[in-house]
Image (cartoon, rainbow, N blue to C red):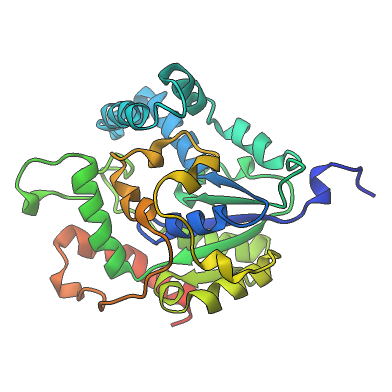
Length: 305
């Protein structure tokens, strides 16, 4: 029998795994407003960034990472200065290491919390599966049509890296410090989904972002039922702006007004219906097509096409 207050007393711990530009932060914002939620924003991705920033070898492969992250942190400090002073902010970010994250996610929940929810990118734990929590977690996934993802990701990369050259010559794969120069971005999400199916849960929850937007109550109600969160219709709406994010465990990156990846999530107050068809493959730029093609087979299998 487990002792009172140990992690095994609270099995309701949930991962939401995602690829970039998949509505995951909007979903995270929704969950952060649920009763008793203890939410962590991309702790393994922040560990990955710290790992890259401390490795001379990796910095050669990701030459823009250090400058980009330093500028992003300075912007976050300016925008979130009322939340944390700059010295504290830097110390908070630096503590994100794989061992430390594992310890935090394995620790007993605070008394006022009813469940733990972690949103992250599985590419950040590639080669670090041993640093996943050793306590029970429900692994869930959110996917998005790769044609939508590719178009949105390239647009975000252009803004994030402040590209000033010929837009047609920008390559979101080769110019992206998160991606090895000599390889297309692999579908880490699909690979990790297969790993979970083979080792943890043969039928993990998979949400499609278009379905979530078009049928929010139906999808969210079913999700809550499967992961053990009592559903309320009030969860379908939340406050626009940064306020709901302030209780989330993160180093403030996405609260910043300069965080182009999270503009829509910050302004969101509900799941809005999809109003357009995905772009055609032929309309994508060559790098978008390459990125889309790397994701498409996995997306189709996860969606059940």
